[in-house]
Image 1: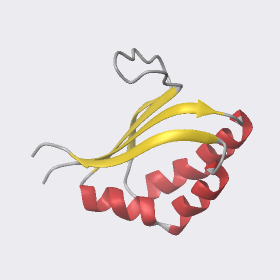
Image 2 (image 1 turned 90 degrees about the horizontal axis):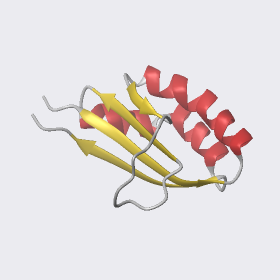
Image 3 (image 1 turned 90 degrees about the vertical axis):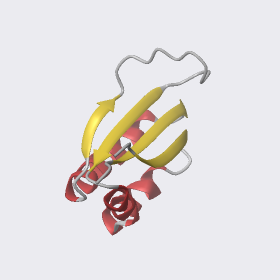
Image 4 (image 1 turned 60 degrees about the vertical axis):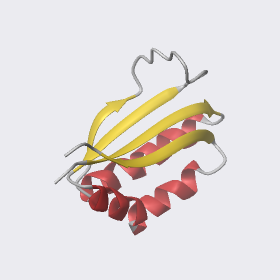
Amino acid sequence: MPKGYWVSVYRTVSDPERLAAYDRLAGPAVEAGGGRVLASGGRVAAREAGNTHRVVLIEFDSLDRAVAAYESEAYQKALVVLADCAERDFRMVEGLG
């Protein structure tokens, strides 16, 4: 079964303290959903995406697990904290078989 991934590209962060609070809530929610963080922060060698502040890549056992983790009550609470403090492009994608 193909893996599922969350891919988040942060263009701007207006409140680093709220982003840190989001991280403290989102981390356990992701882990509870079976997610494994493959990349978070670190260096970004953007070529075509323009300005990127932060990139996060999280792997799940399947796309269904990725969607369920996103829709979980715990992750939804984390999103409330993130609202209006960051501009990001978030995608859930299925990996190749």
